[in-house]
Image (cartoon, rainbow, N blue to C red; front, side, top):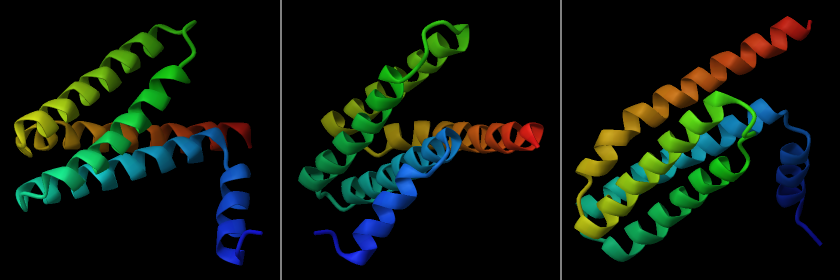
Length: 125
């Protein structure tokens, strides 16, 4: 049996729009990139690898859920794969510079999706 907080989280995720879920994934990726950066900078490479692997899983999920019938999907897939490649480099080289390189792009993409979600919802009304 789930405790009330876990039940609330499960219910809220199940009732989110696709846009809200996408933003949730991006927010989590940004949080994990920042955590990974901090852990690398504190020489905690083992935990950094764990956190960064979770971030890669987020981008892998985003890749496999893209709809291939749109040209934009291929471009997004390439971008997500680039992010994953930089995350792998950060882990392998034990350097936060690779995270610094992609973090602004991930944040910009998150903000773009947020704007698109608002526009999509307002156009339905």
